[in-house]
Image 1 (cartoon, rainbow, N blue to C red):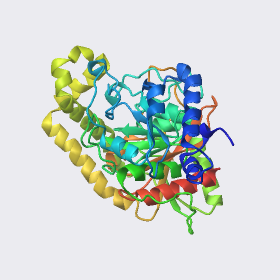
Image 2 (cartoon, one colour; image 1 turned 120 degrees about the horizontal axis):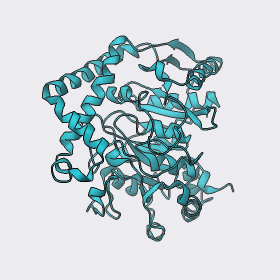
Image 3 (cartoon, rainbow, N blue to C red; image 1 turned 45 degrees about the vertical axis):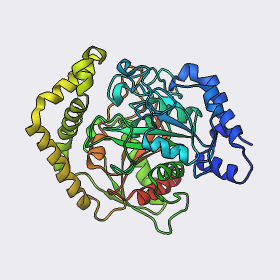
Image 4 (cartoon, rainbow, N blue to C red; image 1 turned 180 degrees about the vertical axis):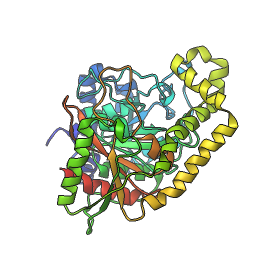
Length: 420
């Protein structure tokens, strides 16, 4: 048998169900990977191998599958510190709802994965497994790096701007940001009420459907079942075409040619000019709502916040309710208008990030190719699509209609298969 730590979650689940793989063997394979590579990758904020071995996998859709939990989601049995010294040693009494349902479905929590400070800006110490001199992206840094390194086949991420899609692309794994609100946020350290979305990372699109479906109580289908039709794909550089690296633009062109050769109808679909308003509306909503939600930290533990975060939160507070309401209204208008953008296509194809993961660990990359879609509340999937000039992964992002998650996942797998 190949290394169990490198199996997709769906393959591992099938082998466990057939009696060909014991959950204990999968767990030990992942623990071996962690013992070997965690000292250089540093994906975990909290990890206890003995406690993981002592946990029992329940029967269910995720029976025996190891899971990484981003450290902005509460766990009853491990500290939840939200990437901040202010919350060091904090022990919640209960799991976040999504974690509780993951456990109830048979998932085994391997540990808490590194997040940037409150899933915002200041990075942790996690490195990109493909080259430790580069960032894994953020804010879901440890989740993306851990899936890529074989520490667990499934992981939770969260996204307010680009914190699932971008790190997944940088680390060469699949990332899925569901439609806004599909996965309940109770037990998450919520920053932006209008934007924060819980999603997942894995090694295949089908893994993401399995995992997200289990924790959301939904049937998201089996994306590995090939559709009988071929898709109409809108080729959309997004509202930030000028920000894309040459290798990203070339990747998008190559992908369009390969998808057309596979039978897809490719339609050029640039976003209307009105969508450029989201470039200012999204960060205003994000920072103003985050500042409001962090009232306790700002008023009682201001010195425990990074300088960069304080600057953004103070700016958010200074905008005032009139500007915040106007920015929220821009988001609502564009969400309503987006139905027309998608009128004659199944999905959009757009970059997952500007390019490869940046060098260094002091910056997790720009969410310029993600924030628009997060503000629109629509489902997004990034799939690996080759590598750039430095040999680091590149990804392409598939965007669907709001609440069309099952179809979006199916077309994302079709695209991933066609791209090879």
